[in-house]
Image (cartoon, rainbow, N blue to C red):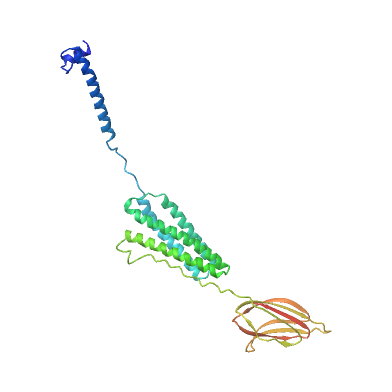
Length: 296
């Protein structure tokens, strides 16, 4: 039995009568309906949303890192403050470099984290704070280098920039904590204060030069507090060697130091400490020609 006969026996419209012209019409109609149905099913399947695996985020890792960042900042700030208060500018430079390096490291860590929307606002504030602390460390480091060179003006400029960025960082951290801990953030904000160092005043070198022959008392001259370098020469041309004695007296005539106590010709250098700034004189006992130079 042929396919058309089976379809006619099954009662399929267009094939039941067995007429050839009806079957000729029915075949293309059934083909069209079949193609249409397949197309409809295909569209329906493609329009169905695909089941996706929920995207994992790094919220737990970010929550773990936040207290680490706060501890790091507290440690670096303490190091900078302690160094500044001791006028330890080498230590200030070391801790400022540490702050810059630590901030850079944690920025790199945050760059790799993908946090969910509820934490995004806090994440952004921590990120902004670390960028500010990175800049603060860079400015404080440069300021410390200038202070080591006793170059006051640029050191103060860099230090003020460093403090500015630290304050910006503190604001960002406190704003983040206000979202995390709304009950306690107002009562216990993070405080960060960098003491402004008192730079060593720039000293203008004082050079005193005196010379003469025989016994003499010089005119008054000013010396500042600190170390002084004294260079003395004495030429004794007499047949018998004579004493060469030089005393440093204050304006009240009180002896503060003996710069030389020699017999015969002499040339030498001595370091002395001036305990307080003021007016001084030299009391010289000699027979021959002498020179005295004080660098203070």
